[in-house]
Structures are given as structure tokens and as C-alpha cells.
Length: 312
Length: 308
Image (cartoon, rainbow over all chains, first blue to last red; front, side, top):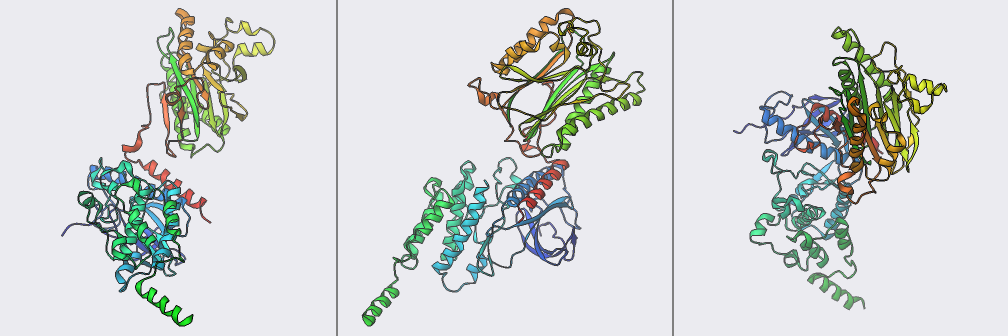
């Protein structure tokens, strides 16, 4: 069994927070639910790269070798980047950072705890197809948040349903900026960012020089695709070799408006220059959907014909 | 901040160089410091070195990201340097405390602040004219002020090297502090030791430095000054800063220093043009504990600032 970093135990007192349980574990961190001194829940992200095993027992993080310490400290910079960027963003659709501190020889980021579920869980739970209204609602709000992120000169670089949280009131929150800005992969392969196949844009695999807002636009388009399909589109690196992705327009023609399908296909273009170049451009395209002249489905059309015959 | 900076220290005809010069800057604040050590043996060199190093270290500790009170910083640091020289002498049972002059300048938020002890000088030129300067703590300057000798007699006076205020002396130093002085683009700040000003009158300096790119003419001026010093020439040192973007040359990209690209908490330091304390290309370097603390402090203050 491979050795993994040990999570902090329940009831562990971390500064003025009491750890409740581990919520999730990613490539660079473990996220816990905890309670502050007033009993209010918070989410605490602990910087602990899984590729470096640094804690097999207890609470103190110790590098097992000088080389590991170097990688560990180097990766910490990225964690700071994330904290630095998020600290400036106070937007309802972006996770809010409440505190940032150092303990146990590593660093922690305290975030607002949100109730709800991820879009990923939502997709997996649903039996029938997601309505266009729902998809549109989620993404219009989410893109507002993403636009705010880009305004602060930060790229998310890991937009996917698992990182989109749906509050109980249905509004989305963009989570996990762990991949943000981690573009220096060549020098320290130990801390290479982990891309999510299907949601990562082709330039993330081979061309970090070309990362831009359009890279997150690809992730947003792939996430919309996943909402409709309940599976991720073909991975971009494979698409570059041999593109098997069937366009959204082809698959769902008639079930969703042409504009939504066109927008998804536009976001999923392999050439970064052919995608919407900014979130604003993407939002404009989604907004431009003429709601009145919505193309009707076969049944809808039949209904309209029947009504017009009865009514008039 | 944008500025063009030049610094150079030359030995003149002396065996050792007892002058020390350095500058360091973060994203939003700049420190320039010159010390001219005095005394036999290694004393003068040590004194100047201690003074300059102390200035840089304190500056990097206090400038987070700017100095809260630049004039207080200048005064405190000079007093600490004075005390440090005393304890250095005590520690090594030196008969004579190493002593030094000092002039230091802080620039932040487009304002300059300076302080000096002894006869190392600061000049501020605007459009070729001198708009501010320090007044030496020297016997000859006193005589000039009393009207006993004329300014032209200063250079040849037998007591020209006698100063009544220095760091490391028996009595506490007299520290002159400037006013908060707004800078305009194109202003030229010059700091120098007596080795330079005694052979290069300020009006001539202004001609050298205010109408041509300083990176071109400053080395020429220093060569000329060293020549004038002759076989008995003193150490001569200068730091010259032209404030704002360089407009006198087309080659602005390579001459103008822009601090906007520095990370908050990072400093770029040059001592005597030869020693570099901090590694500017910090991207491949590990974080030090200090840098971690600073990054956390910065994030926490940002969180506070954006809290609604």
C-alpha cells in the first residue's frame, strides 16, 4: 500500500479552529471542515503536496530529504499565489478567503464554508437531462465570478464540474484555485500540476506559453458539455492526435437552443485563438441567445400547432 | 517607481578605499547611502562598512512595503550605527572607535528625505539649478557661516578635513534631517564624499549631469575628478539618481529601473557595484522563513483590506 500523507485527526485544535473532518484531498492539499471559536463552520486548506510524503504521523510536516524540502518550499510559493489572488477577490461566485496562517511547518488557508454540492455530484445524481435554464443560470453566474478572477490577472486553469460548487440556493461558487498560475512544470516535475483530462485545454498540456483567459474558457465550455452529456468531452491531448469529439450541435440539436450548443462548440475549439478570447465575449454570446425565437422541439411545435388550432 | 541610477567609488591615490556606497530598493521605496570612514588602520573602512550594512538591513526590515516615517528611520538608523560602532570598538578593545560620515536618502511616494552627519553631501538639482543641499558639519563650513572665510577658501583651508559631527565619535552625532521634498521627473539627486566635491564644484556637476544621460556622463565626471585629485587624491564616491523615466536617451529600456515588477517584500541591492546581497532572480530560489512570514503578512493584510 502506498504511503500517503496523514490528515489531521478530528477534534485537532489548529490555531483557533477545531478540525472536524477531511472534506477532500487534492494534489497539493487536504481540505478540512473545521469550526472557529464561535462554532461557525469554515473550510481549511492545508498545503501538503501528495507527491512528497511529508507527514506519516502526528501533525508536524517534515521534509524527508533536502531535495523534498526544496520542492516543498517551492510549491509553497504557488500556494501563496493562490492566497494572494483570492484575498483580493470578494465576489459572491468565488470562494472567499477568511484567513491565512502558518502552523505545523506548513501553511493554511481558511475559506468560507459553503453548503451544497458540486456540479459534478449534481450531474451524477440527475436521472434526466439538465434543463437549458439551469445550465444557463449556473454558467452566467459562474462566468461573473471567473471574470472577476481574470480581472485580477489570475487564471484558474482547472475549471471543471468538481470545482464548481452549487449552494443550496442554486448559485454557483468557483472553488479550488490550486492549479492557478502553476505553470512552471519543466524545472520541478515533482510538483507538476495535475490536469483534469477532458477539461484541460490543449495548450495546458504542451504550450504553457499560450495560456490565457481562453484556457479557462475551454474548461467552462467542457463543463457545460459535461452538464449535457453527463460525461467529459474527449481529452484535449488525445483530440490533438485524433479528434473524435462530436460537436454539441450535432448531439443535442433540437433539445437545446442552437446558441447554447454553438457556444459550447466555440469554447471547445482546439486552437486557442478560435475560442472566445475573454469571459466577457463568452457571456455576450450566451446572452445573445434570442429567448423568444427559441427553436421549438418537435413536441413543443406540435403543442403550439394544437393550441393555435383550438384557441383561434 | 522609475529612475536611472549610477554609483561608483574610486580609490583615488590612496592605498585603501574607506568609502562605502550602496543602494537598495523595494517596489515602493528606495534607499541610497554613502559613508566615508575615518581613522588609521582598518578602522575607517570598518566603520563605513558597518554603517552601510546597518542601513540596508534595517531598511529591508522596516520597509514593509514602505517606511512609516522615513525621517525617523534615517535618524534612528544613524543613532544605531553610532552605537554599533561604539560596541564594536569595545568588543575588540580598540583604542579608537572607528568613525564615519554618513549621508542617506529615502525616496518614497515621489518624495525625498535625507539626513547627514559630517561632510558627505547631498545635492538636488532641478532643471540644471541646485534646489537643495546639505550643509557640512565641518570647521570650514562653520567659518564660512560666520563670515570669517569665503566659500572659495574652503578647499584650500588647512582645517578642511576637520568635522565636528560623525558616527562613532566621542560625542553623540549631530544629525541634520531634511524636509519632505517632492520630486519631479527629471530631478537629479547626487550624493558624494569630499573626495568628489572638493575637486568638482556643484555648478560643474550640474552641467555634467542634468542635460545628458547620467549613465553616460557620470563615469566621465568621475574619471575627470580622479584626475584632478592628482597624486594626493582622496577616495571619491558618488550615487547619482535621475528621477522618473529617462528622457535624454532613446535607450530607455536598459537605463531606467522600474520597480513595479518586484514582488512585495523583495529588494534589489547594490553595494559598491561589486557585491550583491540579494538574488533578484528569486523565482528558482527556495523561500526563506522570512519570506514565508512576509507572504503571509501580505495575504492577511489584503484579506483585511478587501473585507466588507
